[in-house]
Amino acid sequence: MVTTKYNYSVMKNPDSHFSQEQMDLIEDHTELIEYRLFFRFLRTSGRRVTEVLGREEYINNYRSKKTKDILRKKYFEVKGITPNDIRKDGLVIFNILKQHEAVRAPKAIDKKTMELLKDYIAMKGIKDDEPIFKFNRFQAHYRLRKACRNANIRLQGGVKPHLHMYRHSFCIHIIKTAQTPQALRMLQQHLHHSKLDITAHYLQFSQKEKKEMIEKTFRGI
Image (cartoon, rainbow, N blue to C red; front, top):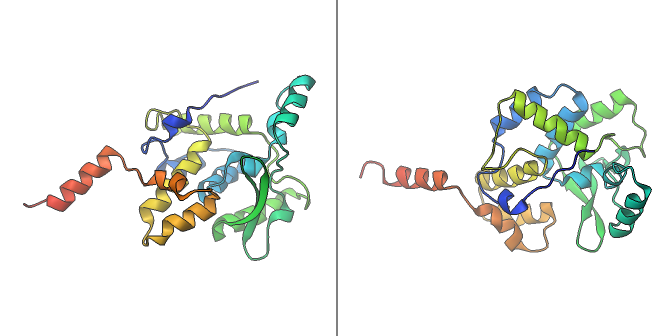
């Protein structure tokens, strides 16, 4: 069994995210369609891995029945998305992880990803109550690292590429392309953060970006 420990304080580094070009490369270097779609889904939805795959896939990765029983008592049940969770209005219902419960809430994804998702469900013949993605986070993590190696994507802000980096990247790119002050509040609601302060963390910018801003402002003086 492969286990991975992440330092999420390091992940808060504003440099530890994928660029849009890097995410294109990752998808281009991912051979299997299910993982390619999964990476795109994380990229465009900003959801946590557990909200997409569920928690059962994580628990079942352990062989010991004792360990499984302990984890089932420790964590409340969270199921991954199924075709039943896709609404006609283009929203997807997720089990959003909160501190003491899982809240079912509809969230938006882009039109292109929705079309690819529906085509994949039809192609694979996935039943309405079946998980759309039938692999676990450890398998997905392996595929991500493999694609990054093949695409020559190394450390991002001192952090090795991993799945949670997609959520970080989603937030960074939304903030950078925002045209109105209301965008931060909308991002907070989309991420289902309890406080705006949590979302506001993504307003951090790298030293390189700050330097470019200064250079652009005072160029020619």
